[in-house]
Image (cartoon, rainbow, N blue to C red):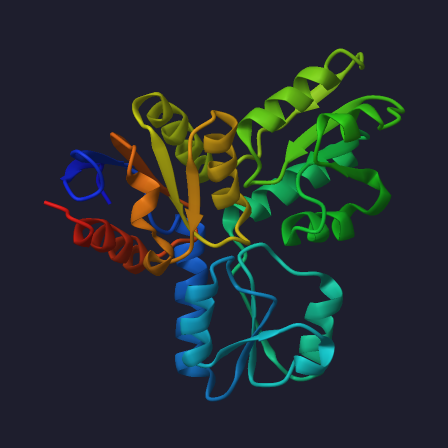
Length: 294
């Protein structure tokens, strides 16, 4: 979706809208959804994912309607095929799917695969590895399984400060982590070690959305963030707006929009997470126009 402005006359006196240039699915999410859909068409039976394929409940709902069902426990692993989510999956789950005779189809994002490979390389080179990420996020769970006690996951500067450093240190990031959080933690760590190796494993598609949001914020009076509430990269965009002191509204669908939000707004910014489909964004823009749009 291209960058643009349009005038919304019914939500206050001539509200303008600035839409981020990068909207809709990133390449990794689009790839995962395409793989899941094609697998459902060819599998000849139920298809399962471990947890949601991507962190957008509306897309997951559409996939379920086409036969791609979410498994949350080993007993749910039935059917003909198992699709690995965009964030990866633990080996124990893969082993169970194979034991049950399911065909495993890997939809892990290539950017995530690269990040894990780089972290593994650091560990192999003798570095104590710190991964800046969200505890419990599938990407960090699979990395922890891969490296065990050779990696420590930290989410905040305080957690990083509490890490006992035992030698040379290597740092990577969850691919959807905040640029600023990663930068601050690395800045703190560099003062504590004699040898620090930092590998930037932030996803470029996520980084550019954060940069666009940052550039947009001085120009707007409120921020509308479109995407799943469980999506870490979408949530970070909303956190950026709130940190700047902007009225910020994180919605999943157009039905959540309230006209009262824009009564004192001159310019509204609209951004989306990397797992937000175009059809939801189009519905949001249509809803804004219905509120008096030109």
